[in-house]
Length: 552
Image 1 (cartoon, rainbow, N blue to C red):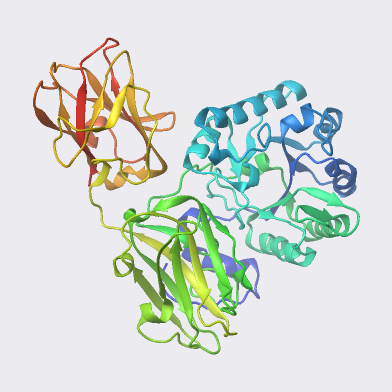
Image 2: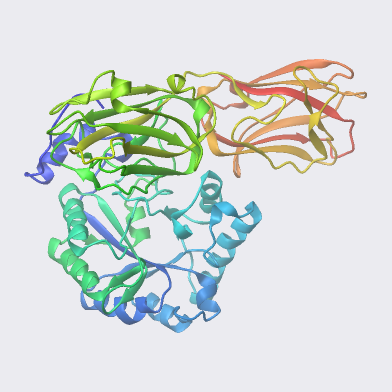
């Protein structure tokens, strides 16, 4: 996005239409009418006793994301099967939320499959459903591998990453606002007003209900809930279930390929969650660089914006962070930017140091933070802090267009003495990643027994954009026998992107194998799974592999 614009939302939807051309391509297309979806997570009994009457009185339907073992097993405080059947008869949607509400990224691939498959199968069998297309991850936690598994069983995935959905949004990362006990009815009314004005799709998440003052964050008071529902009716937005909303989208499951990853651009980028503890807003409308909204932030007493990425980003794939900053009415604020992988600090600087001058009052400035200037070339970026560095109270700062800029393409190591960053060894063949002889270069190579369809399997959870590369290269040694029949297969979960044989493998010598993606019919895609596998179905001699890489 280019140019500068200050926006005040005073003319409603007509103004929005003028600005849509500056919105990101992955979230720019409005619906014909604003929509609101009420979702209720887990299957708490208060969703029946308190939420159901309020919804029925107003003729509103919902999507219930159910923890199936809680219902089937009669857990205390959960819905009964007969209550769920009544909710279904009322016209509500039943959706998946796993068997036992596990943190999916911490499970094995087989355990994730069971949580997804078996909970869906029980809902279909128990309630006579032809399909259960909607799913939400427990705790809002997911990564690339869980998304791949989710897509195998479900047609959509709802997160708790705040924001609005558009007709061309990614339906595997649907945005939703979690209405916790500290979210006021007035705040939610503002979200509903925005959906009505802009033609966007707002999804609200509720858990437990209480007829009085909430005592824990997952509770919503009945009075707050009814006030929210009344505003839905008053604004005349369209009430849809999740699957009805998805049916009105374009059904996109991936985002367009760009030379950057969005941290914030009108809303947080996919995969980023807002864990900030500073006074702030992600929906500032008065002081905006471009698009519809920016971030306002009070950099006081060491408080910070904190954006957490659910699966982490490979730092080696990026060269800098870019953002626009506005010093508000005062300017001169001291603000630190810190890159972290949980507790470890990968690198940091201050905005004024990166600018080479103080933050200016009343105007926007572009900040570029080269990773090289921080000595930052590797690691996993999960946490971005933008934090007060003064310890005092400072004037409001505004931020917009936060982007991680991808590095110029360079060879990406899958294996050079050890697996490259982000790769995990999921191999089922007899093998070693530390064979000391023969070695092509460095200190180690991979030894591999290509027997009876066994294979090396290297997994990359975050995924690699293959459009940035033209071939895969490796050094291969046939050991004492040679002649082994082995293939390379590139996958994105269950989707095979391309396959090619390694050709004639020589005994007693290293041979470079280069496989252009064009010969595989491959130009785009996300590589998460790399197989090097026996194709003979018999026992073969040991093969050695070294310097395995993707070439730009």
